Length: 345
Image (cartoon, rainbow, N blue to C red; front, side, top):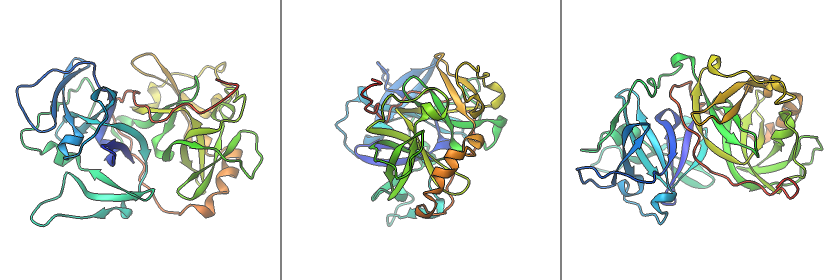
């Protein structure tokens, strides 16, 4: 599982295990007593000093996006307990990718490159994979030391934590298990579905496949759209049978890693389908997210039926789900705008 970021109009992929959190570009930064290419200074993140590195400048790229509109990805090397803030244009969402589909290249007389030595193809474009270990090996590049109070080492299965993608849909905050996500899909037009089904808003095109998209409000017992949206962002999940089904959302916020026992109970008054949730995650700002029980959701009859319509259109290849990891990621990055809903707006 990778985080997909935009840097100067190019796409980079960063392994989800190396992304601790994503935050907006700070209102102010402090200069550091060192002058290095791409080093912008430092920000204060929860009373810690976090060096900020302009990813575009580091890679020799240019961008016209103002700093105030960019996003800071907190990249971590858990083995060395090192962190730094990587400034990118935008966080586009999450994507799963089969490792066997990666390509490699090199430059004569040089070792592996910081970004681009490994890549994969997505939507007809080459996505370069950023190697965090090489990032921290850059000479004289400052880094922050990971403090035990902020997060624990990112080890597979550490502390029994699971990863979730925090999203927004109108006033509803769903959190989808990373292990079930096939891809996050930005705002795309909806087309009529050949199958008539209550919660199905239509289909969206993704990599040549027509994926059914469900009205998240209706499916999760939270009401429903007053009118069918003309477009929507979506989280696509892969069902046990191999097919895909998508769930409408407005925006992607970020990732969180938490333990099931740390979740709050779901009051029955919140939803008529409280059985589809594992609990409630409350972030540091007090915002609540309903954590979806992926196993139960993907066994729902409507989900199974609609996902089965895509089985013959999607390759039955393995994909890398993000292992359970530790560390708290704040919900801050927007990658989609609210869809058009004439009566619900």
